[in-house]
Length: 447
Image 1 (cartoon, rainbow, N blue to C red):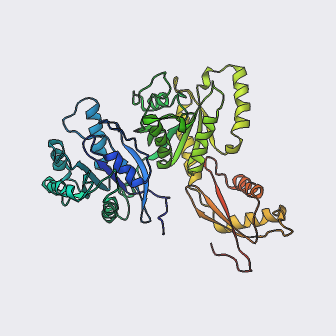
Image 2: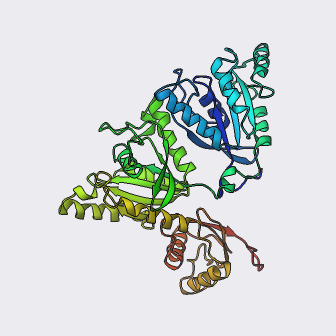
Image 3: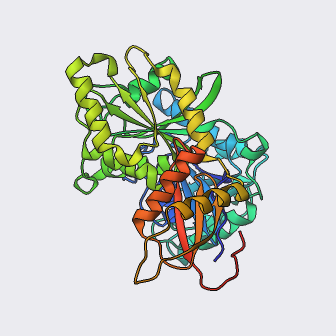
């Protein structure tokens, strides 16, 4: 099965509807995993949450929203704004209705707005668990949005047919491309209580996220458009990762999975560390998630201005020892509380993204690698020394290189190649992916 490349923006499918109709359950069904928080309590999903999905070789973004209620006040009104934003920015809108209840006043109010939408709208009659329930789905023609699609998000009934309809309705290119891609997407991640919400509030110059001294106060990611360095950025503030995910339960467990989703949805991640605390396994794990996801990386060390000379010296040793594998990451020392150094984040983000999108000309790449191999050939394996015949850069975001060789290249030599590529071409702030294809014979592989 051929998959679309993931380098560019993906089309967006927004899942909307009033509270407790099964939107998050449907999102989990689409994703094939339990990523969205699901509880038998109305209003568990409070914000827009985005996930990358794949169906029949086509990748797209699914946005899970809070319950939509045009008459809501307070927190409910905020949820409504989140859902309406998803409607404005989506390429396809899926309106979920509880077929066992039928069309409520809220559903009818949503339908009136959606009938004016320029984007395709698909009505899902959820909780249709068997053929006897399909008559309830038919009643939802009254919404005036076309044929309702009977689905049981919980059991999977009808979900494949729904996804086929979604793919048919998706445009070839997302609207975001026509709008020059929109703001670059930044995941703000780190273990609990390192100051993520404080940093976001400093950047936004408002109390955008709840800040409390209790670790793990922020449960859901909250998108914020922030102007930094004269440019707009889309920040996602995410729930802190627990020490061990499998020891968490309920909402906290699934909220920790959303951190992973935020990294996947981002282009660049800021990993926030606390300068006054030892670099921990949790910090290492967050960094590993970013690297394995292939996202650009900026490491921000918070509370830098609170340290005495002894802790400064100790922290430098910890960074040298514990972050050795990501020496290439862009690093900035900041104070979310005072604002010191925060203004420099924009330059670090831009530099990391520029490296993430760098493509080296093939001729220049091969000339450099040929010289490198002559000076330091790969070690022999099984009595034969492999020969590197050709190197090509297969992709960007992050840069991916394929080395065509007559034999297997040891991991140590691949690390050597990565180090030398960084020395020659930069790539500060981005992981590199180097793979090897073993090819015998004299023909030079085509790039």
